[in-house]
Length: 309
Image (tube, rainbow, N blue to C red; front, side, top):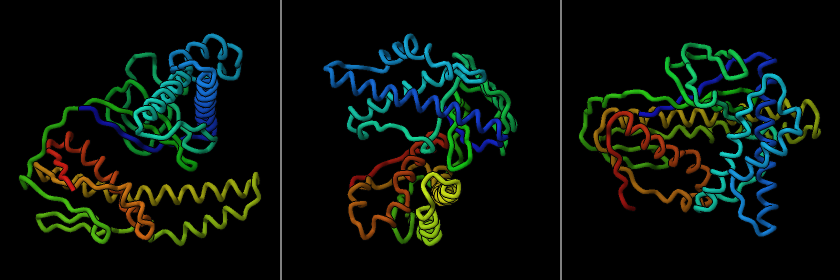
């Protein structure tokens, strides 16, 4: 089956600059494609990512010398157009809103590959195309992947890729279990096991407010404002990681020990419309809970049954 992994990179200052350049080129390409798409649509035409990609490579890219700088992987522009095409596909299927322009420092990321050749990974270092060797904080599985996505959260860079691995189903202790998700208790099982809701956001809310005030009081464009921004982003990332870790522990326990898992089809968007409980419900991460169950069910060999409301 296809598994994915995401881990933090241990980069030098020079490598961080190289990563920022790649993310900047990917952002520029995406924004150029979105602006051109909008202009063509206003003129009565029906653009797509293939037309934009061909025009950009033949007429725009040759004039931009800075994109062809030494050490820059040229595959990032290709994936930028693919991401733009996927964004419009989700919009046309009414699964997402209209694509927005990317901003520097927000969701910076880019994808690279080696032109269809497999990329070997393993250990605590990996050789990226055109970028060179980079180190990681934890060991990677010894395997190969087709492409690698690198992203930035706060001031940290992360690497993510998918790889194939054989996985045998685990021995189940129970044939079936019902899972009731809630606010007071995050998950209550029909077997009697109860997982309390740690409420990570509420626990860290006072510090988040303090850092937000500190950030808002800094002069726009100053170095101190940038430092305050990084502090706030790092704390938001910490809260999100704590929430994900809690959900990972519960979903792994469920999929490893139960053959059939029954969960309710919750109307999460409707629940969030209740402004008195929206903050607590969002902190529970019900959508992330269901997403993890779905892919871990394939990994550990169990079945997810979604019960009607």
